[in-house]
Length: 151
Image 1: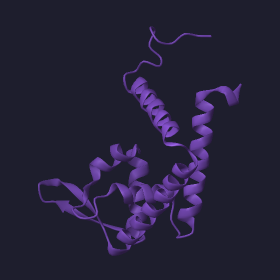
Image 2 (image 1 turned 180 degrees about the vertical axis):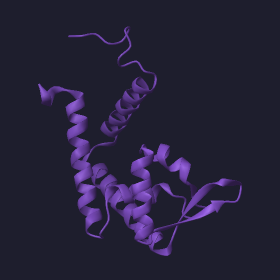
Image 3 (image 1 turned 90 degrees about the vertical axis):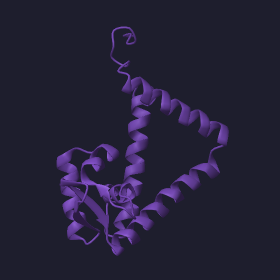
């Protein structure tokens, strides 16, 4: 049963991808979460800390912990937002930019390898299916009475 559900395929694949990314990040003393955060921060103009959580799909507590660790490792620094005195902008340090570039290379290598092994037409269908799943979730159609049918 497990191997036949869409949920199982999604979870098993994402767990394998996350493990792979964490192994690569570990080679530089980092984590997948840190790499994702680095990729989510604008390298030139910084990023408001309040927009990082939604951008990354992370809860405030987890994001706060990740940012604290990144600051301690010298990857980022914080500055008051000049346009909103209450807000904070997150900027990359030179080391943060270097690690962001490494994270980008890791993601591009994964993407490139998959593209070499999967024909474009299959990738297009794969991405279309993911878009449909996201649309079903965001429009709350998965568990509404009209859509869900128990087998």
